Length: 393
Image (cartoon, rainbow, N blue to C red):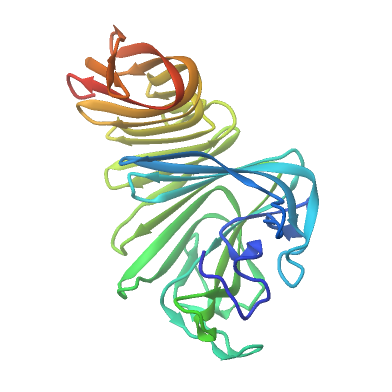
């Protein structure tokens, strides 16, 4: 978020949803938008559960789930706290992926059975600002964060927009935000979101680097807008030096959304959806999947609620039942992975010339067939596996 306003707008900031990087929905198609209502002094109206988290040197992710029953009765203003019961509640999963500590991927799974309007909000900001001038209740100049906004390659004059009004900029995936960091060096943020959606920009208040009135300045709120019963959205957030380059694209994916990133010498594929999918040689049945390869060789793999992953005809992993998640790193001498599941599970995986397999530091038996190994283990939560290889894969 880009700072919680305390003065210029009643209730804006820690209270109503519009001030945050969140999702807002309507009760029905064409209805008013509203974000999740947190609660009052005695009740949580939309409690959130932390379902999964993983922190490893090669991969991190966290997942929260909300049974969404109430939205705000208005998106802003004095009555922002008044709740409205949804006719058909939805379930919202937000998953943040952080591969190799390089960039963030926000995965939003919104599961419902009624067509409605869905807006995914992002606030673009900077520590460099032109201060606001005026006094409480009387603004003589609306200051703003310093940044250049581009949507699908076109420059957006967001500072010239009328305050508080949404401007439509057509269908798109790609957004670029160019500004300067705290050391005054130029940087840029690339945001790429699938599925392609209607993009709007609104100039609105935020608070930057202080608690006084001049620190409350305007910034662009970006919205990806969709009308559907459910949504599988994948949004990549990549910070770059001006001279660096990265290429994003949206891939066609049955029953979901997929994003491809080409950068340096690696290729990343990210998928979120329902059912099996095949993407440029990668296949899986997972609800969420992340895969990185370098020159056609696997490097990173994460599956959330899945049982298999394939690459160019090889079964990287094939499990006897679905697990909560699997996250693996490949090196020339070892395959290391975390596995979260329950019950007896048989693991079959591509591991040519495997010499030793450990589970939680203890050696286990395995069977070998050509370039594959298989073993059966009892799972009761998160377990760590190491497969030592005799030669590179």
